[in-house]
Amino acid sequence: MISARTLAAAACAAVLALTVPASAVAVTRSPAASPTPGPTPAPAAVPAAGQPLPTRMADTGGGSQLVTARAASPRSTTGTVSWWQRHGSRWHRVGTAPARFGANGLAEGDTRKQGTSTTPTGLYDLPFAFGLAKAPAGTEVPYRPVRNTSWWCQDNGSSAYNRWVDPRPRDCAAKEAERLADYPAQYRRALVIGFNYHRPVRGRGAGIFLHVDGRGATAGCVSVPARAMARIVAWVRPAARPHIAIGTDSGRTAVTRY
Image (cartoon, helix red, strand yellow):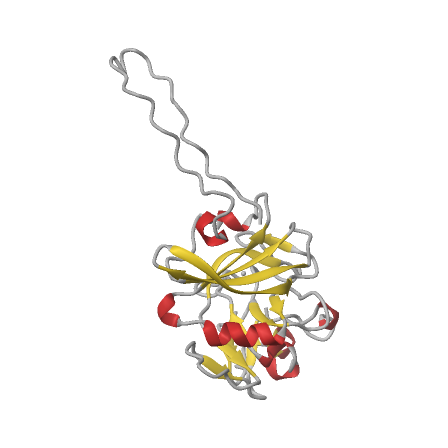
């Protein structure tokens, strides 16, 4: 996703406070329903505040690699990206970097609308990487080199909606697509975020990436400094089922919800 300052030229092609699970609640029963009540069950265990962020999340995707992208509030345009590795039952933070989000903050992924310059919250997979620069040494995730004919289609009327296309098909209008080579800074290296990707909903949004910083806030992507992006691409292992969780410190879009 390109910098918000470039939205006039092209749309962007278009992841902590706790949310604590509710404790067990005692339910009053009538004598007939419970003639010989047993001992009151103990409350469900609540993850301690000092535990690693992934441990406090509702879901991490079931793998052993997780990227978290969190902002202070839905109105924030900056925050933090961290990447985590699970060894056995414990999560360990591998790295962290400052992050940028959409120019209009963050929005719930299930109801986000295309063209709103908001970053969708939620838990998503990371299907593949791409870039104008070569893949970092040790890269295992599928990595597509960007050519002059490489586009990301965000035309709602196209059969290629929210897909990499090379070359651009006739039913994907150039004004409704992004030629990736036009953004050498942002797309030096990037990971596709699986938002609205596997079963695209028209009008929900297209081309949400984790990519290198531009000049400011994005139009819906998550961006990090170039060095951090290279580290993340080299670290991701498809066999580890990596995911990204995007959210806020608290509230309805808290990252711990996903």
